[in-house]
Image 1 (cartoon, one colour):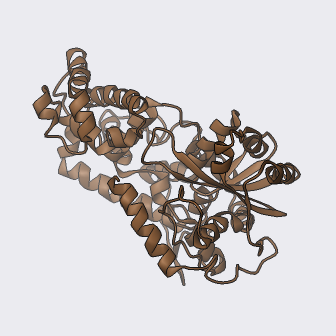
Image 2: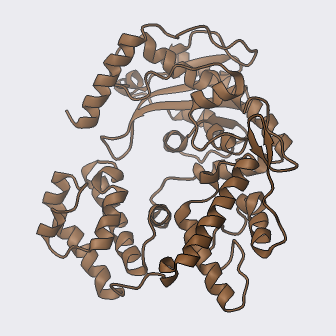
Length: 441
């Protein structure tokens, strides 16, 4: 039993010991919240009825429970759905044992014209697109929406619900043995609550976003967050670079390593993040080990991968060093104390501006991306030029990004002296003039 599976078992036992019923108390009283006990679907006949119900409604709440740390694709253990007239938990294990395909069920959720409600749904949507064989066209992620409506990023479903309604949702079974059967009453209650409140949350957040003029931002960012998780090395490199800036030679090594780890993950049926965690890729890219023994000194590489593929890792690194400039210089502005102080001050101003206008600042920009952009601004300024947020070699935002409208124009004006950072104190914190916090946030 690996560490994470052992941890699942421990938390499973603890959660059931402390939470013996299907729900800690009555569901929140609201017309958009079902008070019914969720139906557990285990037969083709019951599934057909559910599919017909899904297809009769333009909106469906959707979630999954899975085990993702043991295989290349997550092991699906449960699918939760809620429509205005149904609350159901589809157990895929008996269907799998009987050789029944769930494709029609997944297609009923994903077919065009239906809005799918999820919360932090990247893996859930990836499971859906693989099961349905089509790309969902209209997805609303309530975690994204909350971050654009005066709530932190990321916020759990329970946090969003409590912020909106004051109702506290029990979350005892986040990390548990979802592939164990029978599912306990506590597991079933937890799973049902993951979709039970989604229609209410969607309704309340949609109203807030409309008032703020941010509905299009939420739709755009939901698409970005939930885009296809097919292998995208450039996307992975952007994530690595946001975590810790890499020089050109280091980036070339990182590109080779994320490609290698994807191939190894498929070969060994392991998650890519287990084969080589991002932190390990960064360390390898910086240290560039040249022999098998040096690979053993890098933390985070599983023993079986290090034993079988140390030479592959060394070869990938060596191939990059043969074609890329090694020991490439960093940006000298990073060592300029005055420039670093300016960057810190402007970063703080941006964070305050975001907070005072109801935007989660860490969804808007990361510190590493901001620093690279500001160094490019300083370089342009020394050449007598002005650099905007979406141009240059290290843009803060890409063209068409909702962040330009949300804060980019203000930031450029602030740099040019045509905009100010103004704050007004309210009982719940600072706001910018012309903005107001929604009740309860």
